[in-house]
Length: 401
Image (cartoon, rainbow, N blue to C red; front, side, top):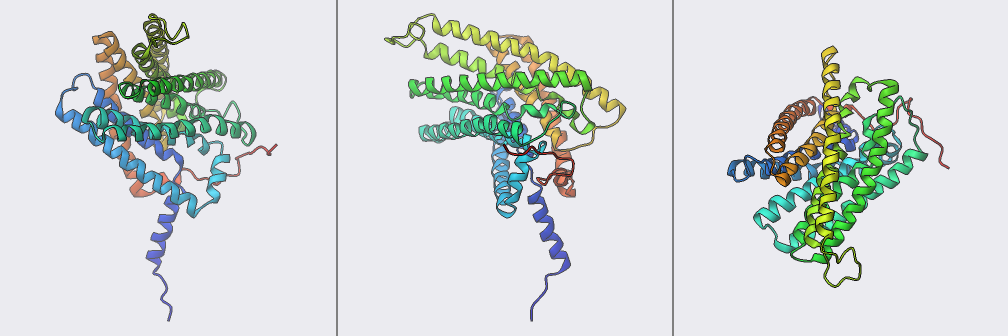
């Protein structure tokens, strides 16, 4: 005689399947936010030698690695159990924009591991560093595919309007900027081992930064045009207003790293190129890189103040409903904090250290608040119902050429 499953068990099984089916790529923004908190704690200027603070930073790194591994597993289960969701997700004009969160989340794992595990604690020795370098190359490929392949899909398979545009349109281009800064960190650690590979890593990273930052600034200009014509987006997307700060902060931080690396790697003795062999090449390029970083930092002040005023004004009139896009507040502000603190180190400036520390405390508070709201949403199941890879009736798609 066949035993039928109890209704209670069936509901649990279906609920678990629904969680997997609705697990959108935007969940990797949780890793991005958690990873940048770990990095800020590690760089915090008033606790560099504090055992508790450095231990807390390591704890956040371990949490980030755990979250990333968990999300990878759930994502794989999603596309195995529901294979149709991949195509419909890629064609969805809203959900597909969060594809870029995966390579950016992986960068936080690589960067944190390179600094807090290998550099500070010597974990794994050279083999671990080469493993991270291989992961970085994988991330470069994925970031390039996102910036080129996904953008092609946006051009040819999706329909977007200026009125419906949000700052999330930056997400496909941003991974190239984020992976470039990671390359700068790895190049510093590769330099004593293999200067040629360190220089190669730096050159590839500069190319990624140039492409990613250029495209992001173009999209930011279009987004500014959209704000002028149509005002700020709907309440649910107001939190994306801070996203343009990400490419500026991460781009400036990457530029500082490149300047320091090139100053160490150049000149190349005996090289035929007059640029690479000139004794002035290293210091000159470092000065140019610093100038770029400071310009991006200054431009970021405008976006930071503008986003703060916009979010405050919107909250005064009515509360912004909590959703996964809230995690988009942490990483852009976090990387701007990293740039500010790095400028404080480069210039030995108390202003940048104090200003960066104040912003860092804001990031910590935001992470704690958003994490509590997310955990509550996970328990209730509400955060898994916000998005699905199945396009709704209002989703238009262009015919394939």
